[in-house]
Image (cartoon, rainbow, N blue to C red):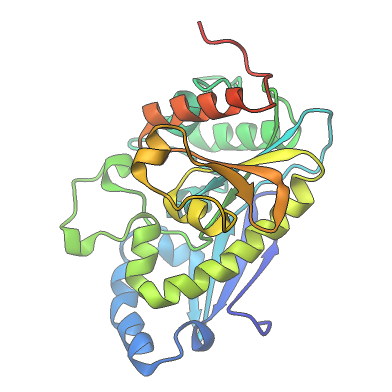
Length: 291
């Protein structure tokens, strides 16, 4: 561990290995006690958590995801910043590996493709494992139809279960819902979440400096991501602003990099519509015209 709350290392083209110093994140005895009471329920909330999390004393180790292609080309860069990873996708080794009963995730077909941002060719006869590998290689090798060179990262690195709607399971009782970023906050508490977000912001900004400069745009596809990455002068996240395409600003500490905010990915229609609208409004007038 370093002297910070969060440390991380890119292990391969997608896998990010992270460690959280719980002594620093949860300095008050009541915070640590509450975490310990909730830990087992969180761990058991998804069948893959036991494979990607490891608690060693006061150090929480886990796998996360980040896909930043190193291959260059002349297209402007687009960094898509999601909320946090789904545990099953981290286990599978690829963003948005599947949803429901191993169906193609809406992120690829109903959001990026319909927004004109990214079209990936694939064989429908491929297994989930083969499709994930194929899609990963396409993104890393820039082998896709898009006006952008695309990178993917998450704002909160800690994985959690997908929502019941996306997992195909019967709805859980509200007290048992550990999905998404809210599931992470439920585990560590709101105060610790604010501290973790400060660390995660630094991580994403470091990623952005490597990927987006000198010319690029970042898109926040989740509330915490927008609020954490926006500049001070930019508006705080409001659903009405997101839905109307009015979350526009600059990336924190990077005034030359545009930051756009869109509705969350679970709302695939509004997310796709606003994503397309915002990109078309900017200088990146490269998207194909809508029919």
